[in-house]
Amino acid sequence: MQVVGSVDAHGMRYSAVFSVQTHRMERHIMYMDELIEQLLDNYYQCTGHKPKHVVYFRDGVGEQGYG
Image 1 (cartoon, rainbow, N blue to C red):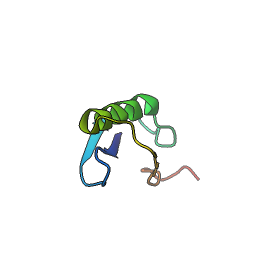
Image 2 (image 1 turned 180 degrees about the vertical axis):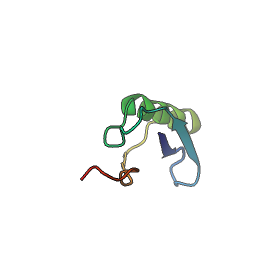
Image 3 (image 1 turned 45 degrees about the vertical axis):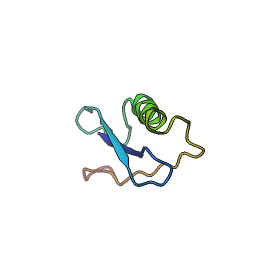
Image 4 (image 1 turned 120 degrees about the horizontal axis):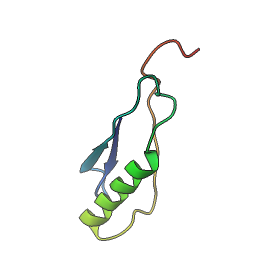
């Protein structure tokens, strides 16, 4: 699983964090809270302040057969 977040106020620089998921677990993102925390820490380290807004996007399910 890869999660990407901006590390500047203009959305021009990005950081990516990764985790391994078990097979066929696309509907539930394991350790999402820890991944987001890492991205927020990266943002803070690059800017010196916390983001004013967090916008979350998610793509579709990777494997067929979930109905």
